[in-house]
Length: 99
Image (tube, rainbow, N blue to C red):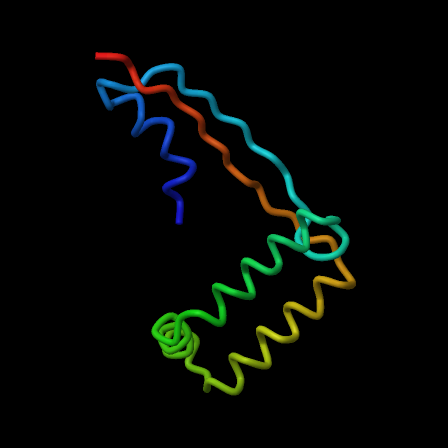
């Protein structure tokens, strides 16, 4: 999960990469974040619904049932409407050297 924050360092060790530029953007997730906040919410919803393996693993780690997990996720997404949770979007740009 932390590869995005380590990406600039990894790119500096790549010989054919130059001009590495990093820009972090603070985003409010959910409707309070406007259009981009809703897009991020949709991505999180898609991710949650796309992986049964992920869900099973999380349930095992949290020692909860699938129904409890589903309720927890639903409550979390409902809470997005009443709060303004923030996340940082790491953007990394680089240029490939001409060889």
